[in-house]
View 1 (tube, helix red, strand yellow):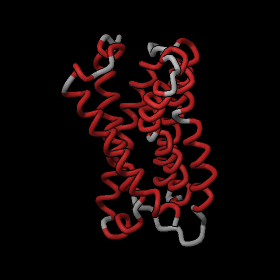
View 2 (cartoon, rainbow, N blue to C red):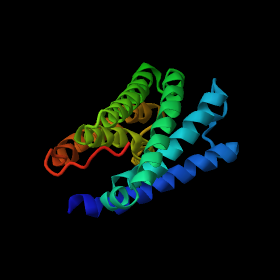
View 3 (cartoon, rainbow, N blue to C red):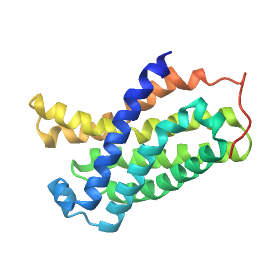
View 4 (tube, rainbow, N blue to C red):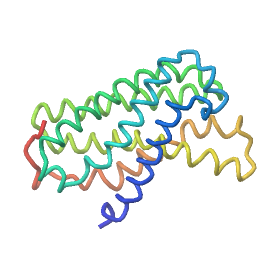
Length: 203
């Protein structure tokens, strides 16, 4: 029941931020000032493109009806999701050390990128080994980290509207955008994936 209630909100926010990523790709003037002079322009483009694609695909991979009715589409969307994160995660890891906010922000974003890559690779390896339950659990963790792109863009305007200086808030948000996501996923959703009724491997 909880997942059914939250899914439309999650999907709406994820697709909305994915469209924002597309806008940043095609309209550089929309980028925040500190992104317009990024040290690795190609890495920035790969990060936007891959992150946007993962955000757009992720919510629909959690629909049981989608997996049951269109298993081939689920497989191909899954492969695209993994490829998108491999590109975006590596690019994000490189960019993390040039982010604003000093060492605290650098380590926050670098940790996010490393865990994003690790959880996604673990999900892929699990399904290749036929372990559907482990695959689903790792995918929940992976998408919780993907969703950091959404929470980041919620926390920044909220913190600024509350009077916090960007320089003060941003290093905190570099951690807050993903650590609570992972805790909520681990607490609410990962335990719901049980061995009983596990579907056969689809990849």
